[in-house]
Length: 86
Image 1: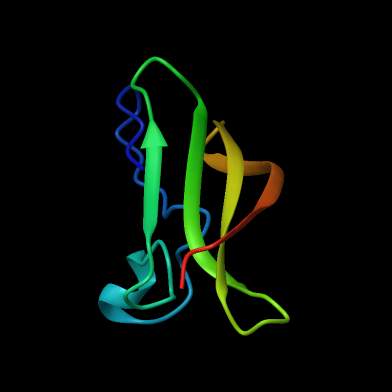
Image 2: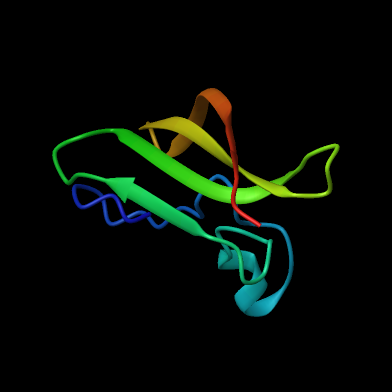
């Protein structure tokens, strides 16, 4: 995340765990659906990642909501979808 007012670069809230390019990863579940939604005029960041394994062994999408303020992210909440994706 780049703050266009200050030029500060901050790792995304789901990143920052690892070395090299892994430091910037959004979703660690390889080959799983993932995505990031944001708008330039908003502090809200929405991250979707199929990183939840259900009791049936399937993957489910976790949607997490963050607000970016003062150079860091605060997690507002997470929800897990009911529909199996894999």
